Image (cartoon, rainbow, N blue to C red; front, side, top):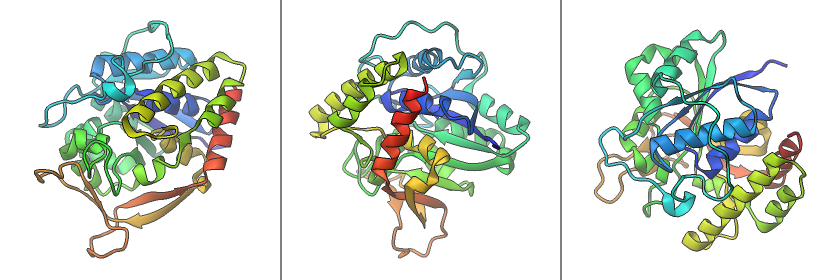
Length: 309
């Protein structure tokens, strides 16, 4: 089987952590590297969390590089109310066995893409700062990017009334990526809110007898509790995991080719993704947007993946 070469660009974060865990279990994916960005927590915390998860799933040979600590021009904001002060509250995880690379995350992205024999797929699940920096510094890498499968945006918001957190956190970087001409697959809130880890799902995870599943169960319990408290959700939407799931099983997803434009100037709407679902603007299509998820199939895949550990 030919493997898909991927770079995970993330801000762990409970759902980012589970994304790494799913990706590491899939023989069809070749993880070239993991880069981190400030988002759910400050950059040192998200990078340390990524290293902890790599230890958990024995990704000992995968490079982890610390990326952008600040948005392009905005003031950094994190999400401790959802992910806890560490960015990964809930389970007790040992301190990482190694440190991050001395190379900046955007330089790692550039080097890995330039050095790859086959086109690379990038999976950003946090603010898009590293990806935008890489495209500004080395625009020629576009020629060796197969596509960018990202989590962000929506026809509604979760951080402001109209903006989703990842895009809102650095809308200028997001606009650079969305306007790049690189093929995009976008998992926004419209589809990620369909991937709820309900009590029934968490119970299934906790029935699996291995350490990785135990940690995932604890991550989901904490994540579900904060979503219940903040949004009155009946479970935890594992937003970021859908990027990896799409790379493994695209048949689980219904997408639509649309134009998506990022708002950077609105007084109350910065970070909003204007998603032209009905083609009323005449703007050129630049993304596949996730609309519907085969929820049963998705959780079946997740449970089977966790059983492999």
